[in-house]
Image (cartoon, rainbow, N blue to C red; front, side):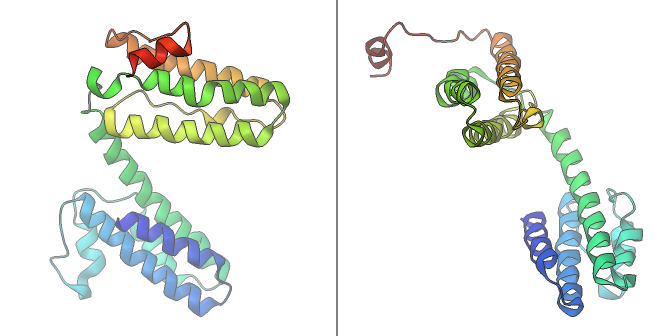
Amino acid sequence: KHLDNATLTYGKMMFEEEIGAIRQLSGDVISHLTNTVCFLNHSYFKLGVKHYLEGMLAMECVPKYFEQYFNGVMYAASVLDIKETTTKLIKTVKDLYDEIAEETLKKVIPTKDNFKGTYEEIWSNWKNKIQYAADHKDIFLAFSSGVSCQNFYDLMHKEHGTSSINLMKHFQANDLKSFANAFEEAMQLYKEDYDKLQLQVLTYDSIDAFRKDYT
């Protein structure tokens, strides 16, 4: 929640042009980010506002270069400097957040119950769309389907510990065939998790057979 609030406030700041408004929003970003660090440390400020930074730096998990970027925001003398330093500050906190989240994810083990049927879902929802888009050079269909499938992969990785799959790094608007191939490779990687659990991919010879199995 705190990191989400920091990100939203950061977005507002980046659209501003007046230095006073930008400074104010950068301060709000700092507030949300310090709360994020407290949350990650399961802690709170014990030394009060007068020793704000000191209390932060005394915590077990502190983002890299946090003190430098924290002070840098306040020392920044121009609109560009404020925005660039705030960007560095929010990125270093997000990096720590992602690092801790990834360590937590390693403890999540996929099970048959939460994994069954998901490969078939990928096939049903996105495979044909991606192939159609590649065949007909439909850039937006390929892009939007890829993003939707990427969201699915990310959700399964976060909540159920499946393999981390980065599909969208392969997207190229001028080479949809290559993207379709990357999609197939991503599906194969996902299927390896299926195989580890000894789950069979369900296939049907007809729509009637499918309906019979699901009714």
